[in-house]
Length: 138
Image (tube, rainbow, N blue to C red; front, top):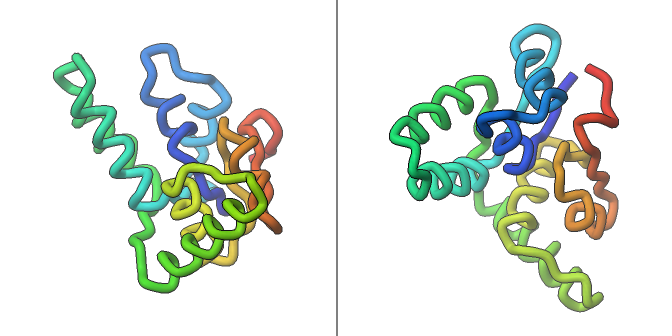
């Protein structure tokens, strides 16, 4: 099964006392499951690692990213993200632009579901579903 992950799930795994269900999801990658993230998640994780007081934070982040497939931004993804952001803004439901880029990246793979701790934001996007790791079977 394929899973598109938001940054929040990666952060779950990187924490000293990570969330078990998120850890289990990552452990399932390479067996029967594949995890995908946007290059935007890589940027967000890199920022967090660079700000971390832990000396090995960047190495831990790099090791984590080896479990997933990283999807680069393309012009069609950028255009779709702009459409998502504009539609949400017009409706008074604006979310962070990075989340729009992440959702557009998932859509570029034909995926309309994202595993996240930030369900409120992603559920605002029409035709998109956000789920917690605890809500999925893998």
